[in-house]
Structures are given as C-alpha cells and as structure tokens.
Length: 68
Image (cartoon, rainbow, N blue to C red):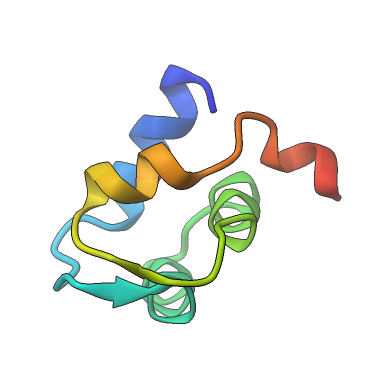
C-alpha cells in the first residue's frame, strides 16, 4: 500500500464505527462512493475484525491492485 492508498482508505473509512469486519468496511466505503482502488484494497483484507483504521491500513496487502 502506498501513502496515497493509505489516504484513500482513511478517507473512505472516515466516521466508521469500529470494531468492524471486512464486509462492513466494504459496505461503508462503497456507500461513501470510494474509488475502485480503495475498494480493491479493502477486498484484499484478510477476514476478521478490525479495531481501528490503523489496523485496517496495516492489514491491507502492499499490492492489492495486483489481484485484479
């Protein structure tokens, strides 16, 4: 994940109530009209619960767009 990707994820999840699982994160970001790269980065998250946006950033693989 690049610095720009981190900013995108942070922006897409701004105001999100944590803890949240991957599906909740995806739904929230999609409802906020997150871009394709952001959604793909969130789809690449391992299943599980995340306690903060910092945990989400740490869990996103470094190159999620390569999974397209």
